[in-house]
Structure formats: C-alpha cells, structure tokens
Image (cartoon, rainbow, N blue to C red; front, side, top):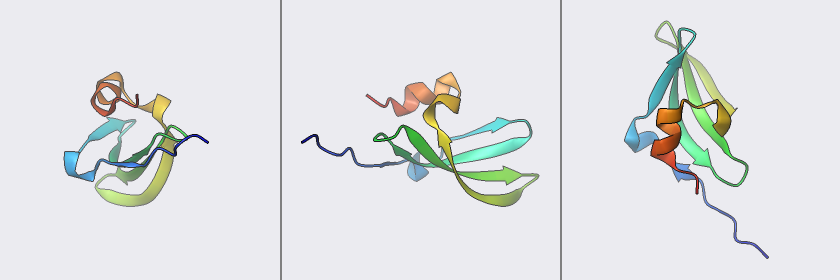
Length: 68
C-alpha cells in the first residue's frame, strides 16, 4: 500500500499572489490530491478559506513549492 503524503504547511513562508484584484495567501499544500488551502482577500477584507487546484498557481510559486 502506498504511503500517504502529508500536507505541507506554507503559512511561515508567507507566500501570496494577486489575481483580478483578489489576493490569495497560501496556507497549506496537499500533495495527495494536488490542491492548496488559501485565504482570499478582496479590498483588504477576508473572504474566507478556499481550496484551489495547484495548476492555478503562477509559475513562480509552483517552483517555490515543488510538489515532487
């Protein structure tokens, strides 16, 4: 049976990106299903915690996280 990969905490790295006037702060990366937990901010207001696919990240952040 294959080992489960543990989630990688990203809060201490303080990684974030902005897309369409919405800022996303990365919380954790889940390599098992290639998703990220993020907090969305719009105009400085916290909109909540969301789950986004790894593929939606900018290339510069993908290189930083390195899922392999």
